Image (cartoon, rainbow, N blue to C red; front, side, top):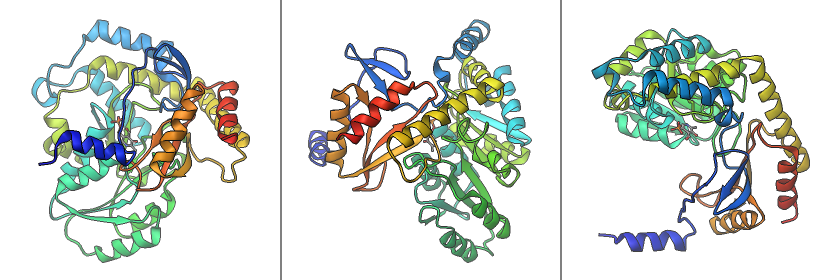
Length: 378
Ligand SMILES: Cc1ncc(COP(=O)(O)O)c(C=O)c1O
């Protein structure tokens, strides 16, 4: 049996050892670590809503009214009104008849993919799909097929192969890819899924509030063609929780089949109250202003960096290659007062380590200028 200390030593040798650190201030554009203030480019709080006074106040009021916890799974102790209100509003915003909220996005993907598919089904995933989607696929026992990132030709040949398949065929993609920041070829994917009568799941984790109000499918006018809209309320919505918006029958199946929904305590009601407030802000004039500010920041950073390819989201990877080098660069930036995580294997393929810069509406010009200068001077 491999000794854990040996295993950790091996990870260290490969520059794949991970370390967590304590943040002594709230998650924001500037954070305090070990008493020192840093500019933070590691958070997915794209619109700065984690610190929005109205979201915090909604959380507080939710706590006063509903208490701290939900008590049990909703199948055991019932749905509290905030669960249902959040689901109804999410369904309406997504243009679907139903929605289910989960404790987080990971358990949503895991429960949805493993719950709706079984050994007689086929799941076809973009190669860069998030770990939660891959884990759900593995857990389902379905036949797993992978197409190279955004390679619609390969997707088509896989759909062709399974076109007479008697079980379900589910195509899975992210809307904005979490480690590359690029977009799914959603128009082509929708065209294929319709041609071959397959189901389509789109993970909008990094697109909600960034691409349109509710994500890429909505921005492109494709919401109606996406069967399963999955996402998290922990990134641009600034709170926590996961959701699946879909039609009634599929949502009904979730409460029979999705083990992460059935066998898990429902999210705290106050969390749902706060998430709903964040979504209301995203849909209001203020949300448009925040999104405009975010895109202004993304464009300013791209200009400062003289990027040739314009970013498609708030995730801007700086490609490095070797894990060791990425770690060294992340440490050097940190010594100069800026936090940018080094993302390495297994989060990204081997030898494609990168610095993952995430931009927020909460960043100020001087934050972006400071990072761009450090990166250009390296
Ligand atoms: C693409 C993608 N899907 C799902 C998740 C999981 O969401 P959550 O953080 O709410 O568990 C994440 C990130 O964590 C993600 O990046």
